[in-house]
Amino acid sequence: MSGLVGVLALYRAEPEAFTNDHLRILQVITSKVALFIENALKYRQAESSATSDYLTGMANARALSLHLEQELARCKREHSTVAVMVCDLNGFKEINDLYGHLSGDKVLKLFANLMRDVCREYDYAARMGGDEFVIVAPNMTPGSVTERACLLNALAQEACRQVCGADHLSLSLGAAFYPQDGPDSEQLLAEADRRMYASKQLHYRRPDKVVPIMAHSAQLASAS
Image 1 (cartoon, rainbow, N blue to C red):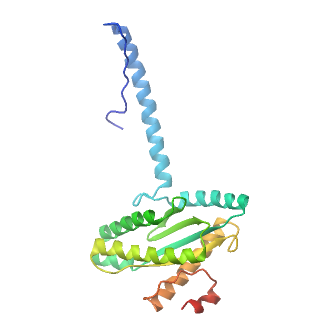
Image 2: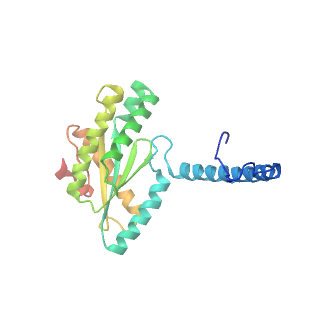
Image 3: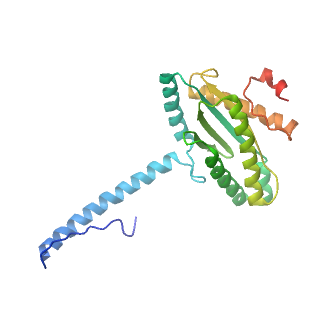
């Protein structure tokens, strides 16, 4: 790290109170303090990069896993519920193919910002990788998940229009709920992911309809 990392200032009321000996001692001290500050800043940067997605600045898969474990522990203590929503962008590959990966990255960054804006202050949003995102939403009902899915679909379309000037994107969402869909984070994420893919298959049969899948596959016919 180069450049200024801090300023150390000493003051005395008497004029010319500091001697050359004071200056030499101060130079030794400041070099040590600067090293401590630099190491602390590097540690903070490394810690942040380990839990943040490099492109969007959202939490990454590792941070999501840690947060979800903590959230489930809270739910068990308080006998409350939490929804885990897995979202995937339909048509994202087409954006990369038509406009290039830089435009694709811009779409992801814009969509991530829009997603954060509509999340409640106690929701937790993360990017799992690629064009897949996860939201952990305490005490969210199936009806509220349906509303959130429609809103996120509109935001995905808006992000695409702003960057590409055309409509290529939509969103598929699958949701799983604690405790009825699983006792731990692994099962909840797996079930929400499975339902997201069911929603994606339904989208390609009915591209005009946004259906968040919250039921088992045997019940999908009622959604279509």
